Amino acid sequence: MNDVHSKSFLDLKIIGIIPARYASTRFPGKPLIDIAGKSMIQRVYEQASKAKSLSKVVIATDDERIADEVKRFGGEFVFTSSTHQSGTDRCAEVIDQLPEFDIVINIQGDEPFIEPAQIDLLASCFMEEKVQLATLIKPIQSQESIYNPNSPKVVIDVNGRAMYFSRSPIPFIRNGEPGVWAEKHQFYKHIGIYGYRTESLKAITKLPPSSLEIAESLEQLRWIENGFYIQTKVTDLETVAIDTPEDLLKLNKLLEALKLE
Image 1 (cartoon, rainbow, N blue to C red):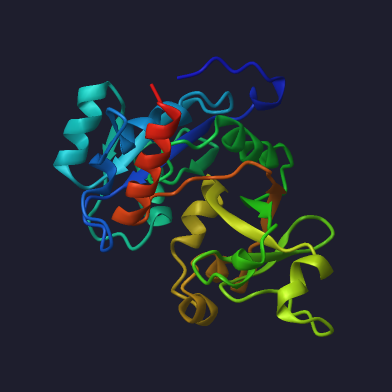
Image 2: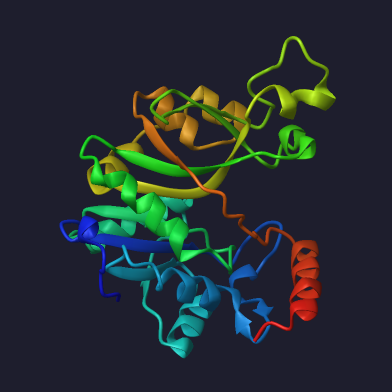
């Protein structure tokens, strides 16, 4: 897919997988929506394909309509089961079909302008052989984000390993009014892109849902609760996710103002 220009990635075969399903509860058909003349899934695929770390990029789907769209723009796809509960499970099935890869990068299918640099940053975590799982985090600057339950927060240790993820503000600032918490501590929000060593990916998808995962509705808590650690790296790049039709409306207004080609 890409010529790898960085020697750091030469010894690893890294695949980027974009899980894409048609039957989204909040936004059915989301991968096929038009964004300035291209489908969202095409935009995600094209951005991911620019990442220097990836040897291959595929879309994992269970829907013929999405597969037909991928064929139309010349992308690669793999059919997966319709029973998967998460993109992580879908990635694991792809690896069963394509076992030659060392690392999997799970790329969100609803972020049409994901920066290739973010993918490469995440992939760089696996230059350390001990890293099993990895993700990105971003410093929170606004008070609103701290209290937004749709924006999961994360606390990390001195080595950048995730200690806990929560929809609630973490940590709790005991000696400070809620309106000034951002001034008292550096909060981080979770950026929903994951990397896995293939053996770790297979292992975590065999685990049953955990109590913390069920409580917060965050699958990564299952991994932590079962003794896996998640390495993080900090990015300052913002992501634009399309979760609802309202998000698309806002994005289209922005693109119209920018006159995106």
